Length: 359
Image (cartoon, rainbow, N blue to C red):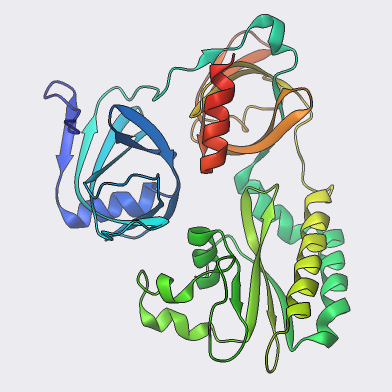
C-alpha cells in the first residue's frame, strides 16, 4: 500500500529536518490521539514516550518490520508522520525514529461515527465530566484527602524503612517508566533484579534511556502507580526496606495501595459535572453528544482534555479521556460536542469498535 496518502493539491508542508521533527514530536505526540495507518485501516495507538529523536508506542500486533505511518489532526490539519522501526524483533513496545512529516489541509474525522438510534439514546449518555488540568491542583489542595493520606502512610511506616506518596504533574523518572510500561517497579533486593512479568523489566527499559537516570533507582524498592478513575496517572507509592522484600511484604503493600487508591477515588472534593450528555454518535475513535451550555462554557473548549464517564447499556459504563475537537450551539440551552478518545487501551478500542458496530 502506498502510505504517502497526500496529494500535491492538499499538502501544506513536508518536513524532513530532524530538529523540526523533534520539536513537533515533543510538543504534540503525548497530547494528541494518534493512530497508525496500515493496510487501508487506522488503528489507535498508545504513545508511551516521546523524545526529540524517537517515540515508543505500544505494539499494535503488526508482524512486519516495515516503516510505521502515524497520523493525527491538529488545528484543522492532518499530520502524517513517517517512522523507521528500530527494534527489529517482535516486542510489546515499538521503538520508532522519525524521518518525514507531511502536513495536509482539511483534517477529517478518522472513522465515520455510527448514529445512536433514538430508541436507544435514553440509555446511552455521558456524565461526571472533569477537566484533566484541574485534577492535579485539586489533589494538592484537598486537606481532608491529605490528612487521610498521611494517616494511611503513618500506619505502615514502622514496618518499612521508607513509605512515600509521590504525586506530580511533571514526570519524574519513575513516572516516565510507569507511563511506558503501565507496570509497577519491584526490586526485591540490593542487586536490582526485576522479578516476573508483572513488573517493569528494568534491563529491557535501559535500551531506551541513558544510564545516568537509573542511578536514582536502587533496590530493595517497590513503587506502585496510583490512578485516578483508572485513567490518569497521579503518582506512585514508593516503599523501601533495609535488606530484602519477602512475599508477604508484596501482598501487604498491594492491599495497602488498593485501599489508598480507593480513598483517592472516593474523595468528594473533586468537582464533577452532574448534567448528562446525550450520545448522538460513536466510533472507536470518537463520540458526539449533546450537553447543556450554561455553566459549561470552559469545560468544552476546543483542545480541552476531559475525563468523563460513558454509560452504554444495562448498567455498563466506563471512564474515558477525550479531547474536544469541535462544539456548536444548538440553541440557547444546548450545545453539540465532537470529541476524540485519548490514550485508549487496546481492549477499550476493540470494545468501542464492537459496540459501535452493533448500534
